[in-house]
Amino acid sequence: MSATAPHPTRRVSTPGSAPGSDEGAVQGTGPGAAGARAEIVVDLDAIEHNTRVLSALVAPAAFMAVVKADAYGHGMLEVAAAARRAGAPWLGVATAEEALTLRADGDTGRLLCWVFAPGDDYTAVLDADVDVAVYTPAQVAQVAETAERLGCVARVHLKIDTGLSRGGAREPEWPALVAAAKKAQDAGSLHAVGVWSHLVASDEPENPVTDLQAAVFDRAVAVAEQAGLALEVRHVANSAAAVLRPELRHDLVRCGIALYGLDAAPGVMPAIGLRPAMTVRGRLAMVKEIPAGQGVSYGHAWTAGRATTLGLVPVGYADGIPRAASPGAEVWVDGRRRPVRGKVCMDQIVVDLEGDTPAAGSEFVLLGPGTHGEPTADDWAAAIGTINYEVVSRLGGRLVRRHVGGSATSHR
Ligand SMILES: *Cc1c(COP(=O)(O)O)cnc(C)c1O
Image (cartoon, rainbow, N blue to C red; front, side):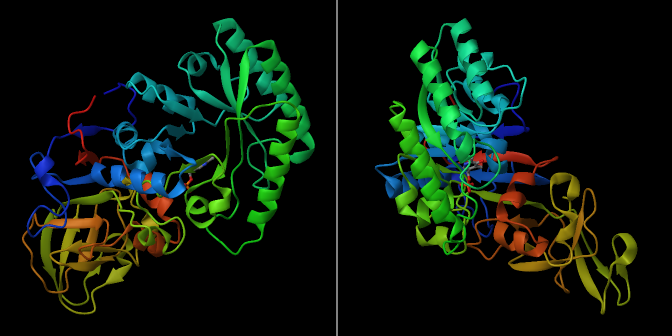
């Protein structure tokens, strides 16, 4: 694996340990996992399955697997390889570093990178045959100069700001961006292959802003085509729009959260048969009895109303479990969900076993697909007051990631 991989990862070939294959446990425990304090298990079969389901759903539009932010906490290189195996023609990332890490790992397919800042050097990404997003005429000029120096033709995707007010040219500035791209294209150093945008509220199908954005997008495409740009891909849809707004699929959809099998809008993903890929599990560090009236964790934010038993889960906010998870979050232990008690600590959390006494070392599951009753990323998001995206993409710290399944267990 590349030395620049952003998170410690063990690749373990454990075909027999795919989720559900281990009797009595929520997740397979496989060789190398038996003693794991706490780990993120990522089911690459689910990633491949979700890639195939989404690709078939959106066809004839093409599918882009968005693997930015270490694949939303799932491990960028492994997820990207799984998506490619399942036929994803495009990958999408935010930063140049992410794009270059994929190339260093041997990925050679179409790859779009969209977060740049003034002063960035495009040499490495253009040299690595990465498609880049452009937002301003100045950026077009810089990309064109770099390509000319390298003797290559840069592939760019012009971004129209249709209302998100994030990156991209607003409609009044759009003709100037198109003209700059056309000029550079005529000079031979750049090819404007795409026009794209990003939605404000794709997860709210009733929100009228989506229609307004779609209208701006259509006008922007028309302006680009009238200026003589022969576009290869028009793209605006993320996961929620790819599913909920078929008319917005255009030539390409950019799916992140759905690739991981998580809901982009309530109830949408299970309806099309996507499978959550991530499970966070490990072994209880300790089990103990406490009497009625005993306070638990820092500040004694929670006090036992009656005698109970506690389980110590060796994961904390330094591993990406938000402190705001308590009270409200639950952890699966010994066949049931157990409430988190008291404050989440840096390295540990305490759960209420309510008189049960599983052995220390018993399995806990912080979150998973939910098929065995364990909490899901959505349950954690609800407990914290955030979205599933933030729950999974923040997980890390000292959690070790382990990939299981996948049609090729030995990596490239
Ligand atoms: C992250 C991102 C996506 C993926 O969005 P999902 O809602 O996870 O599908 C698509 N496009 C852009 C520009 C993004 O930044």
